Image (cartoon, rainbow, N blue to C red; front, side):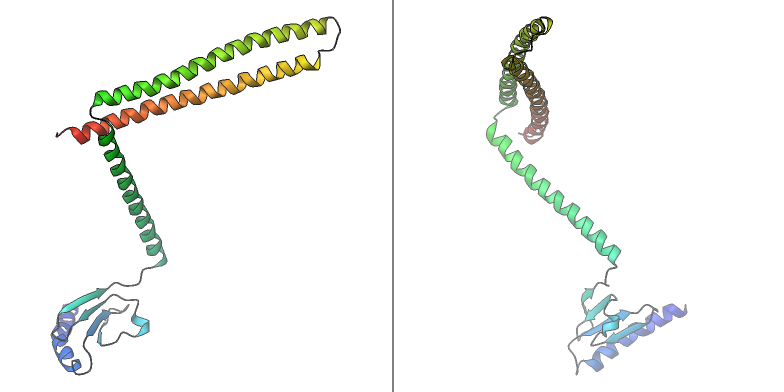
Length: 208
């Protein structure tokens, strides 16, 4: 009850303070310090500048609220939330560009399916061609290995040229297998991207 009366007393005092200060200032500030004491003044002392304060015009109308100074933890959290919001805006802008591209590029889902199948067919052709090369190289490698074995059985050293052929064949097989692996990953990516794009295209055109 005492606190309420204390607050009412200051509320009643505000117009008087404003009237008396009008001759000296065009504005009045109100703030509550860390002890709960209410202050009114046309200037805020530096030691109280960290508190939330309200500004009133000469008629007693509140014109602005100054927030209290944030703690380091609050500043860090505000920065984190701002970064999240900024990332959301970037993603939304990126999605908007992608949406416009989908609508400008394709006139129907059938167009998208044809485009998907065309890209997959190109990748599949490269995979098949590379696998044929692997098989051919493996055949040569077996021939080189048999030839080298003949030299070893006869007690003769394997010629350097033959050793180089064996090494090169093995390296080609390794490189081509890695190429196939990368293309298979690319193929999965193409399928996944088109699945997502087709679903999004349906959302964008469902009301048309």
